[in-house]
Structures are given as C-alpha cells and as structure tokens.
Amino acid sequence: MTDMIEVEGVTKAFGGIVANNDITLAVPEGRITGLIGPNGSGKTTLFNSIVGYHPIDSGSIRFEGAEISDFRVQQIARLGLLRTFQQTRIYSKMNCVKNMLISVPHRHESYATIFKTYPPEVTEKAERLLEFVGLYEKRLLISGDLSFGQQKLLEFAMALMNEPKVLLLDEPTAGINPTLINGLIDRLKRATREFGITLFVIEHNMPVIMGLADNIYCLSNGRVLAHGTPAEIQKDGRVIDAYLGGHHAVDSEESD
Ligand code: ADP
Ligand code: MG
Image 1 (tube, rainbow, N blue to C red):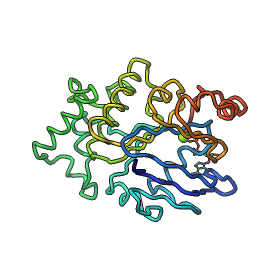
Image 2: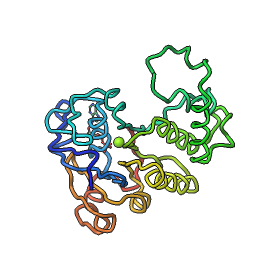
Image 3: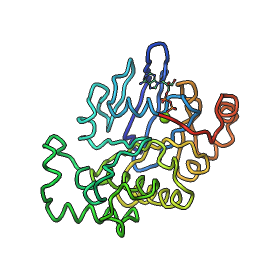
C-alpha cells in the first residue's frame, strides 16, 4: 500500500509551546485515517504544517514521495492536497452553485470573475457534486440560509470541486445534528470509494471516528501517543488516560 502523506520527525513550536513534538505518521492511499487527541494536543497544528500554512521547525513532510515541507499553501493545493477548516468558510450571501463555482482554482483572477458565466461542464460538475452531498434541491438557495450541517456538506462539496487526491478534514461533524452526521459519514466513505480520495480526519466525536476510520493516530501533548485500528485504539489505556487524565472531557467543545 502506498502512503500519500509521510510525516517524519516533525516539530513545530510557537514561542515556548511545542505544539508538535517529533511527530512521525503516514496516511495510506485510498483509506480514511483518523487523528484524535485532547484539546490542545496539536492536531490542527499538524494539519497546518502539512498543507504549508506555516513552516515547520524540523522534520520532513512528503506527499506522494516528494518533499513538500518548504512549499506554500497554493503549491501544495495544486499537487492535490487540500484541507477544510474547523470554522466553515463559505460565501453566505451567494447560492450554493456560486459557492461551488468560485471554489475551483484560478483564484488569482479578479473578483469580477465571480460574475462571469462558467462553462456548462463546470456548472454540471457543481450540480453533480451538490447532488452527491444531498444539496441538489437547495442548490439555488443563499448558502447563509442553510443549516450549519448543510453548510458543512456544502464545504465538503466545494473541496471535491477541486478533485483533491488527499483531503484533510478538521472536525467535519462539529456542531452538526446526529441525522446529518450520519449523512456526512456516509458521504465521506463514498468519496473514498467512488472518487478514490484519501482522507485524513480530525474528529473528537469518538463513535464517529471509530466508525469512520481504517486506522487512527492519537496525539497527546504534541506527540503521537498511539496508533492502531479503531478496536485497538478503543481499548488502549494510554488513550483513555490522555482523555480522562487531562483537563478536557472526550466530548468537550474545541476552539481553533
Ligand atoms: P488541537 O487542534 O489538538 O486542539 P492545536 O494544534 O490547535 O491543538 O494547538 C496545540 C497547541 O499549540 C496549543 O497549546 C495551542 O495553544 C498552540 N497553538 C496552536 N496554534 C498556535 C499559534 N498560531 N500561535 C500560538 N500557539 C498556538
Ligand atoms: Mg484543533
């Protein structure tokens, strides 16, 4: 099995805080890899390092075997490695299709491109992906009028517009009601099967990540504490201690 992402000995500090401390892990192709850990354990920092949002202090990050740790966000995105954010990032005054259209590359063009017409195949692709996430009926609604969970689905569809090879999802189910969570999990699994996308998912909802991921890494205090299948992680005493022994409960709210 090929590893799409290889993180080796990555360290990243903010002032005196070592957010990622000598992290080594791999994200295998075509699978769903989970990333868990208590609040402040360094999950979002690792995602930011992988996608080039900030430079790392030491270590190596490879994408499809090539070193990318010196690359910038746009370079890495062009290689097919994308992320979504803990906070939803959509244009709330535009309808869903418009959001989909402006999420594709050529972001360097002026704001005026938003008002241009798009080739029919691009619009068709947008509608097809909106159908995939269950938003086809709402495609012409102003996205600010969607429920929070539907906005998350829209954001996922927007990421798919870019045809990523690997998608990093930071807490995709946070703030979504249980019914939509099931729909989202189903879509994430289908995206790996039908589009061959590799997923790397931060999630603090334990039942969700146990049902979703093929394998899971657990961070604690910036280090990899454990790695294994969901069944192995679930009965790992170190993982349970990391959650219960810290200052945060498993289901605590996270902030960015
Ligand atoms: P998680 O996503 O697991 O909750 P984070 O990666 O957001 O954890 O944070 C890990 C640690 O790094 C925390 O102590 C946090 O306060 C710190 N941190 C994260 N980003 C920054 C930043 N931009 N500047 C300073 N400290 C940061
Ligand atoms: Mg986080």
